[in-house]
Length: 256
Image (tube, rainbow, N blue to C red; front, side, top):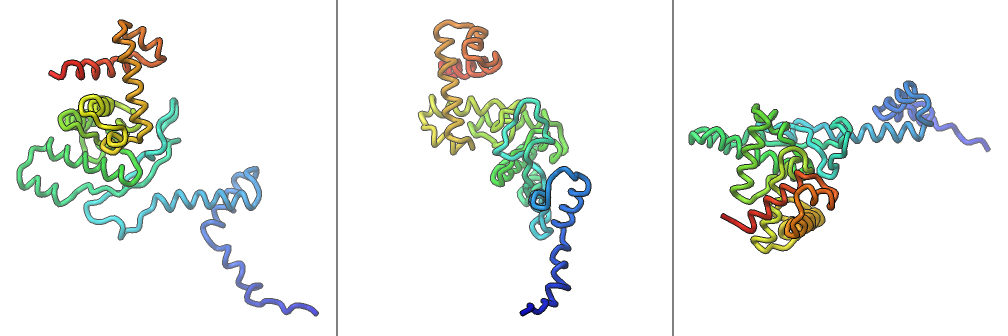
């Protein structure tokens, strides 16, 4: 017995293919015929749509005073010779202008203090959303120079012992080196454990233990009389890194 034709499926099933995913798959198959068959093209189209969806925010998700910005994925640390174009980015929504900023203006708060508060807020908001801002990101957002931002944040971290989560610190990119000092001071001066330090400095426990172990190795070499050059050679690290930890060692031995 012959099956009765499904009129609806025969005439309207093709409408299911009229979507952006199919259009992407068709275009990729046309432009890159060696990419693969239909299943591969569909998978590639899905991946493209995932990226597009992640980078688009509905208007009702961005309020007045907020801005959508692309930050570096906190889980994608830098690698040698890899440009930012090949680094994972995540969209973050930042409060570029908040009520407290207006209050600071009305109170005639000095401009450097206002800029610092805003920079700290932007870094923390980005970090909470899984992204890290660089000093250049902050400079562009705040219409200033990156060295200005770096100096303000470095002074803030040194004076308060609080780490601002940004790419310079958590990814060791640029001028943010104070996190090593803060981590070592919290352990050897304040007697805190790795878990507490990790929580207070926005690092993982593994990263904290790695910094502390590196400090111990460098301190042991220096206390045995090795020069900075010899220490760097024996430990397979840079002389600049040895100098950074050596300065921390001197500060711990002579807090004044």
